[in-house]
Image (cartoon, rainbow, N blue to C red; front, side, top):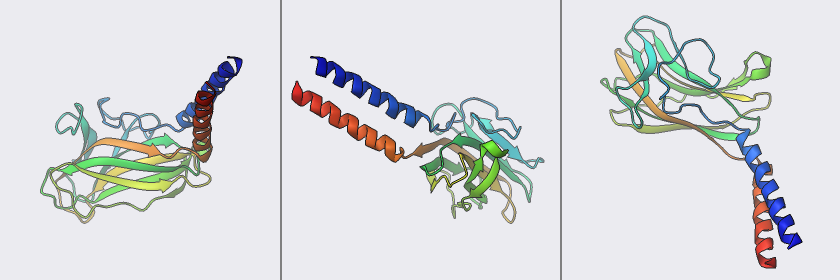
Length: 212
């Protein structure tokens, strides 16, 4: 009985360590853009931050075209040589593989929105200095139905944050353009230590059952 109690305590402690390790890698906040109007203050920690170059271009949460829930992100380009987008900073330790994914659709004439979906790797302890970034992922075409799109990468050395960006631009592309984005997510692969701990916890449970 004493051994059984010790095993239960050990397994519980291992589970707490694994959970703590996994929780240290945060996911996106408000992946469905349900929180309401976006702000353009340059701060993407814990929220979506919008950006445009003004004019008839806009970036905001809207109830017009949700894929799920009540809202989605609507990006509009009404001016030539314009841009519009949103970003969020996600804390992820260096060396962690992750995926940034979204669902999106174009409701205008599918004339080529100049989509720029990317991840910028920054060092939050050094004024968000950019370490590197992925190439812009630009779908060749985007239809009027919801389609998935994603980027896979690994946080490089020196960076502790993934700045996930979805933007559209009309440099060389026609206007107007209207893109809707919804159900954005950042998923990650647990660190090898976490995987090993989970395996050890499983072995401990199996051993405990055999002894019972």
